[in-house]
Length: 150
Image (cartoon, rainbow, N blue to C red; front, side, top):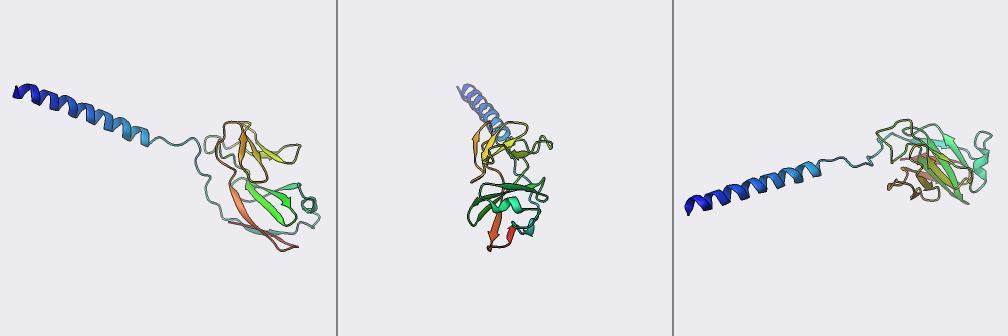
């Protein structure tokens, strides 16, 4: 009788250890969407300058050097500009060639590898496999100069 109880304890212990091992292994899996590395961003542009004059019109955008792999600046409303990282939040870090670019409509950014689409009004994904929004940088517009920073 004691031997049978001891065997049951051994079996339950092994099952418990096996289950614990599976739980630990599952919790260590990396997410598909990893965070894009922090890169210091702090610059000012003049949307009225020759280089960026298309940003004066609501709904227009410009590509700017900076961030991890480039930045999209989007003129959302009268005094509101959005700035997004061009690195694909879906494909990073597995594919460094993937970037988001603004499509012909000027309202949507498209991931060149996964085909995921993001709204430029808020950076949220609305089509494709991506679940994370585009990484957004802060902006401040004083009526003349646009400050982009993090």
